[in-house]
Amino acid sequence: MENVLLINNPNSGRRQALKYKKAVVKFLLEKRLKFKSIAIDEIEKTPFDNFDTIIVIGGDGTVNKVLPHVLNKDKTIGIIPSGTANLLAAKLKIPTNVKKALKIIENGRISNIDILKINDKYSALRLGLGYDSDIICKTPQSFKNKFGYFAYFLSGILFALRLKQKHYTIFYDNKKLSIVATCIIAANAGNMFRNIFSISQKCELDDGLLDIFILKVKNPIMFFAEFLQIIFDKKSTNSKAMYFQTSNFKIKNDITTGHIDGEKQKFKGDIEINITPKSVKIFSNTTTC
Image (tube, rainbow, N blue to C red; front, top):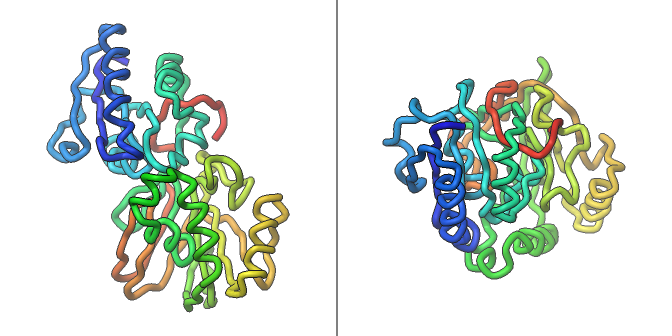
């Protein structure tokens, strides 16, 4: 770590990033490291070539904006979590305490993680459609500001009471499948609500595979029964849900609203998802992902 680009998203989380920036700048000055500080909206006009380390103060969406600039390059991301969810940081065991997060960067342990390419966008975590998208995209910002990540949990209960089904045609492993579903998740990391549960315990950041979860049920009682199976890792493919792994996944689509790592997306045309194996380096607190 010699030349550092510090990227700050002042609007992430409950504006914690502004406070965290002072701590990071102090750390860099104490280590006598060369650095440049920019806001997230300056990222596209900033050349990355001169930097070997990119420290990101923000949430999952902020990290995603950095991915195209470091993909398959000899640069390492350091995360200072200050978003609403911080799921990537949680998967990498990076704490939300800024001093502890800086300690992980200082220790220098690196994980090489897979990245999803979703049409022309990159993602570290997941694509969500249907129920999963409703939770992320329709939870009011004021609600998130007040309750933080717990706002998604409350919205999850609310939207589970009014599940909507949609017809999907999907392609994977040279197979074609037509289904009616309330939710589709294609995940690189399937952890939700920090690391409380995951859509699949096999879902790892460095295994070169997508984990697919398809929820079919519309009845709220049946949904909560399936949800309990997720929590207690008793999941199985049945008439209510599907779980499988693949290296590529395509959804036939006209116009659909979904989310990529917590950021709302409007998809026009088919959605194609591929894995770019071990293509990004991140400072982490784990030897496996």
